[in-house]
Length: 292
Image (cartoon, rainbow, N blue to C red; front, side, top):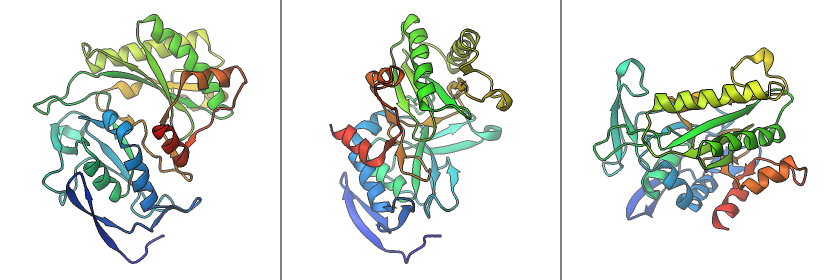
């Protein structure tokens, strides 16, 4: 376990004094990527990730001692969080047994830095936001998770992404792809907020079932492990109100510091046409894309 003697530095972010600890701690041993580099990454892509996170209750996956050590999910904001940090209390909406959960709302760089300093490498959020009174609204986006089974990869996901785009376009929805930073991809489509999570989930499920019927050798809508070889599982269920998805521009807690990174459709098309190999995006590449 990487556990050096604790060192603390006070920095000013958005006019807030934040205590940042152990900037030299290695969080990704395979690449030697430190906590300071992770914090710098999130600051570098703040203009991209903050609009994705705004007013969405954020669930974190924390690796306090790096990806080679234990990790845990965290929904509730830590009790020692500063008073200025935005938060929302939600009861029975994605919590077990109707419990009340106090989620952070990431509206500024200071909040982002505070959470990442705690080892929150992954930031997950639902497809809905909260309103001015802190209550859940209808989803403003639809998501389809493209999860390749054994023998399949990003090349197969790219083929499926174009098929999903075609269906979403026929329904009048503009969509955009995002490589997950893990194995596969996500497909997003913006919504007008007129439909609830149950209705959006039903639409996503119908889309996944339809594509499975048309392309049974490539696509699967049920998570049946015995049938997944060489296929892409279309996970429609992340549209359920209680579920979350990795936020675009979030790092992943994998061996390598990869990013859930939005992609251009030309990149997906080039992969399908054999012009370029589609790969997951590294931390350094994501910074270049954000600043390009």
